[in-house]
Length: 135
Length: 135
DNA sequence: GTCATTTTTGCAATTCTATTGCATTTGCAT
DNA sequence: ATGCAAATGCAATAGAATTGCAAAAATGAC
Image 1: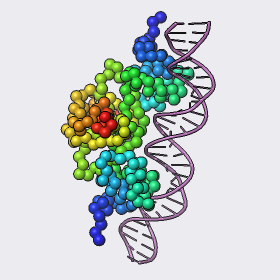
Image 2 (image 1 turned 90 degrees about the horizontal axis):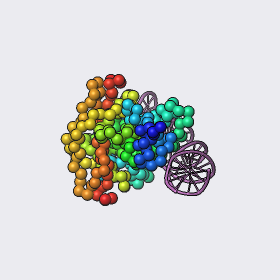
Image 3 (image 1 turned 120 degrees about the vertical axis):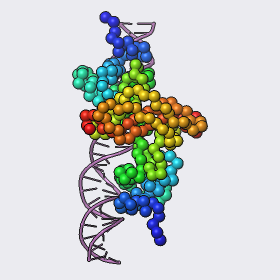
Image 4 (image 1 turned 30 degrees about the horizontal axis):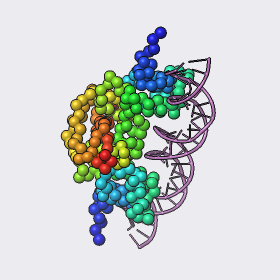
């Protein structure tokens, strides 16, 4: 039996562990970027042997380091994560009522000019407001 | 003796208290947006009767509610604050080495289109990288 | 100025999110 | 199958922010 796609992807970057497998699997299915806590809850719902919270954090850090997952920082307090592969960078919408984060369609955003000597590594655009559900 | 400009400004919106006065005074002098902790430290350095940390948080919340101060969320973990009046909205640069936040020049940024039923309230663009000092 | 009312403050305790240390377990190359 | 580096679980800790409540301070009325 050939390994499933998630295992294949993970194996290209290093060890395949249960925590990484679940994290990537859940993020692939997610409709929105998820907080570590939401991801943990989803894993706990999916399997009785869900990884520890700390392990979820470490799995996410690893996935981000490998470029498989993106961390979205500009939200309320918790970080959010979304799959990076086959998913071009895009802005996000944070609903200030329900707290959910939505992906906005990819859009050519021009960065503002940087002062001399400044080097940009990444940029992030977050729009806050009310989503269709909460409006 | 006429009240100083900061007192005048605060009085237009409500009670003038020491914590609000110091918060607004320090933010006006600051070269970069400040975290509550940086603001607290600056106040403690400026006066032996500096307000409590909690009071700094509450003063900042109040100033934000009155529109005198802007909260910048998209950083590492701590929020940053900057004066809002006479200061058009602009993007920010977070140095991932020294942790300082810099203001970028105001720049026409076009927001991505929102899905039907979504209502934007504010948008925030954060660029991460290395500042001239750390590069 | 003094008093009464309402708003703020300080302090301690608590919440929330994330990180660290370390012994144990697991993945996987051999 | 086995050895060893890498990953995990658990408990403790850190950092940022919030909450409850009695004491203190700011304003408006006299």
